[in-house]
Image: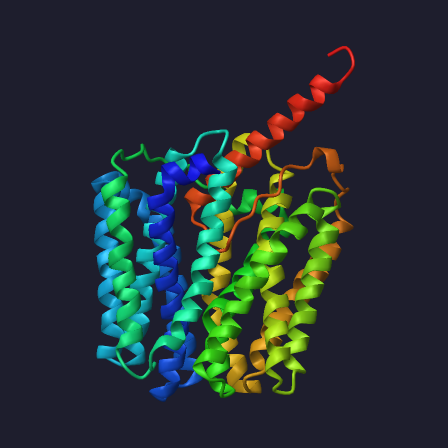
Length: 425
């Protein structure tokens, strides 16, 4: 752990600041949009636009890096993010905000790709798992810290837009000054979606459904909070609880995942997600109940993402794992784009509680489909399953490939240990 921090502290610190900025702008736009009188559908377009840009950036960034290099891509896109942050309060128009969100989603995705390739280069086979875990903790923790900063100023003014802009500008300084070598960059060509679906139908369908769940939580939870009249501090606490739950429940679910049938665990975990949504739906306006709902829903959505990734890997050869990751991210991205749009429509039809209805329905579909798939294919023996690796749904193909490399290394080490423990080996 110390070795990872000493070699990659600047990268982790800079990424932490970027995640704080990203977490602030999502919550802030929902609150400011309510103050400006934007409708629910308009805000759903704004929130969905981020995921359109993010999906485009994850697929375009590798070509940009190969053409002009890591440093130029990182610096240029971070500067664009900083500029758009200031543009939001200057032109309070939903269509301008929508275009800004597309651009910011694109830029953040490409910045993540750049940073993650640096992280992979800085890590060794011995500490790659620790490096990846620290990176994911920084990502999730940054969003939680962002919600704390939301109460430092009036959302109707400029200060809360200036803070993330400054944070982005500060984030690139230690990274660009301390990381001198630029790693060789290459990504694996994605597996075709048809081939990926044939390998793991549950992995594909589950990733699509979770894309909708995550984007509803990340993009529309603050819109929901504004609609029901929560204060800025309450909205920030509500949004933070999704990510606090994700951090606290990730390890125990991962521990269970390595010891029990993963399809059964998908069913149970998604059912808990339904329960979390029902808690919110029947909360009766109780803020504590709303927080409990957010904790449960957020606590199972990210572990489900990692769980479905591990389940898919169980049916892949080592050589195909990296190729499959690109397809899984693309499928998850398609679900993420549709999530805010459908949530916004349901909130228009059923009121703010449409937020919970949407998340509950997606989890119910996942429960039903995972149960069905369990009847179509025999269960893999526990000793033959691969490692569970903690991943967030904002991961790019580079982070996914790092995770796949770590999973393969862990599995191979386990096989070698088993062979050495065998009598006569």
